[in-house]
Image (cartoon, rainbow, N blue to C red; front, side, top):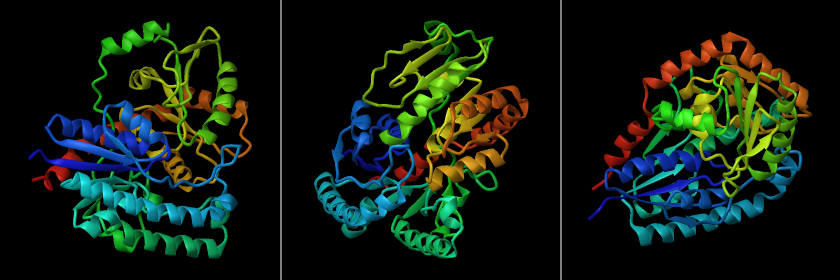
Length: 392
């Protein structure tokens, strides 16, 4: 009988799904069958890549029209979230009984771990956020800090239902997700740093040149890639600002902007003589390789890939999004980029930040250093070894 793995990525944004897809594609070459379950944009994204993806009830927080995390509305939505979480466990248990996998591989999804525990199916969880970080404004309150600590310990216990907790990050002191993964006493005994889950850099020079020629990009001049990801409501306000910001850059700077919409057009449209706009960019890796600097949110998957490509970054994390704020602060403290606050951000601030990143060589030097550390760890192969150890 062919061994089977069951992948369960968190459905908000595409970072979690993209990580598991890379692992599933590697397992596919080893004749290991994979099936997914998720919700939101992740379902269509996984399906687009040729894998079956079962839909489950969604669990998401609430985002406001300015692209920030809405604390009040998210709290009001908690009863509905608990209902959907219970429904997720029921749905996952039914899926697992029908599919009967050898191993569950979760990326930041608790329901599948609990379902696996109930059914006696081994599981591993890939996680760069063991606990929920509150926004800096809330953390000024002592009561909020106590809540965050208790919440972290509770989630640490829950994540520990997995047989192994795999952290797709660099080991200390270079860990991007340090604020999200450290100081949880229960789970910390199981943490294993496996390296970034990012595509192997087989983007050949011929591929890169082909994309550069198609977009009429002059590789002797600076190229900026603005790659915006995350929930739909958080993307578009920043995309519009980024277009305005890029148009104000020096005439020698070229740019490519991706809206990050997995259902959008893959045909680029022209922005001025030196810019391009994608709804969905099918040549993301090639443009990562072409670029001199990147403008990103603070998502772990995107920052991991930036480090793997050795690119300095300008990060603009989602307002009140504790994880992205912490990741962005860490990349800035490591000296590989600049972090801007999304609160009342202007196009001119983005323009200034981009110019600083590409004109100051110290950011490129630090990015190159981190790339060297990252290259010594192969997250995909390390996780594949763990998964295969559970297969019949």
